[in-house]
Image (cartoon, rainbow, N blue to C red):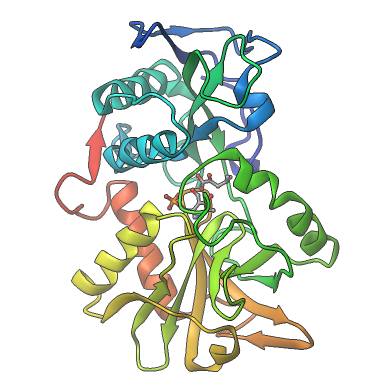
Amino acid sequence: MVDINWDELGFSYMKTPFRYRSHWKDGKWDEGELTEDNQLHISESSPAIHYGQQCFEGLKAYRCKDGSINLFRVDQNAKRFNQSGGRLLMPHVPEEKFIEAVKQVVLANHEYVPPYGTGGTLYIRPLLIGTGDSMGIGPAPEYIFTVFCMPVGFIFKGDLEPSNFIVSDYDRAAPVGTGAVKVGGNYASSLLPGEKAKEQSFSDCIYLDPQTHTKIEEVGSANFFAITKNNEFVTPISPSILPSITKYSLLYLAQDRLGMKAYEGDVFIDELDQFSEAGACGTAAVISPIGGIKYGDDFHVFYSESEVGPVTKRLYDELTGIQFGDVEAPKDWIINL
Ligand code: PLP
Ligand code: COI
């Protein structure tokens, strides 16, 4: 058994033994294989590192009570990966190839899937980069598709501990730019605002819609949701936010399992008092309750700065129960390894 203190995992890189690699050249993918080499050897002129021609995904493997391993909605990550790649003129990665790569990496590193009950999970990072000798602005002549993984804990505060966020003056994406796809440039542009938020002791920033700066879009690298005072689940709608797989799962669970009205709609930053609870949701964030939001001189507290609200807790229990195999999953949400 590997020697890891599972209770103290944060969200950091750890080299695990195996990663998957496949190369695209002359219009086709090679077979792909697992390797122990965690270094990429690429041309200094690769479009990925000059012009940001790259995209990635984030998903998790969960240890179940019986010792088996669950993958959550990996087909959705495969689809979004190709939407991201397509936006940057990168080659299609067949869904079966993507899912097979994820399975191979998880099974080869199975000892690194944290034990059931520790709260830890195995974070899986599929990545597609444009490589090869190339200087003009245009799509790369070659590509590398790689999938690696590491055990992780929480990205914000601990399990269901609320944290506070500040509304940023910066935009992370343009109104009809690349906000809806998972490409590195969106994250590069969020580094400075994120740093400024952390300097002021906030977990991260809230981004408003880049067109009017009146509506909430994203919570750092997670989607936003809120519970209205009449018990409805609402999450922002916009062409410049990432279509979060967790968000769509929560929309379904709020409606189907909790019997709530659940919808995507406008969330105006000056109307926060209509909500009783709020949270950030995403693969890394899972469900992280939002204590309060600072906007200009105002600081709005939702449910509490120290305790999770009851609806957020029920959604969390339902979602994580499905992911860890304790609650029956909707059809096709889980692959059990
Ligand atoms: N929004 C951004 C900007 C993200 O980086 C992520 C993380 O993937 C999310 C939202 C949440 O998406 P998902 O639930 O698919 O992980
Ligand atoms: C995720 O939730 O998977 C993310 O990609 C968030 C972040 C760490 C980039």
